[in-house]
Image (cartoon, rainbow, N blue to C red):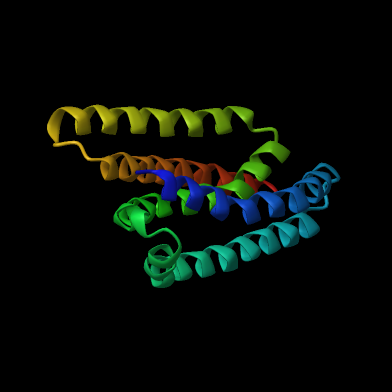
Length: 168
């Protein structure tokens, strides 16, 4: 049932992973050299590239996935709702990647740890509530993953804003 989800996750993550390898060394070097103007410019480009990619990916997924899956993988059409349920999680995690680079450059490893810990705790709490309160369906687990990823994103955005204020 999750084959189409696994395929979607893999395909969606190829570009952001490749892009991160292009931006990561430059961002770290500029931050460590104290060149904050160029650091912020590179960071803005990184966010822009990801935003364009994610916007296109989300639109194409919502508009064409039914058609494409229906033609290429018709037996997986019934699982397409799982792709829609995991899409927010993938989006939040993808857009968080430049923030994690900034946290690494600023050597805020505890912040990365606590962001991950908050995400795991939220996931576990929601999972326990879901398992004991609701008639479980697979889609619920993907929705919980998306909520957990959102919490990870929000926490990291708060820390990110603090770091950017410090670098002025």
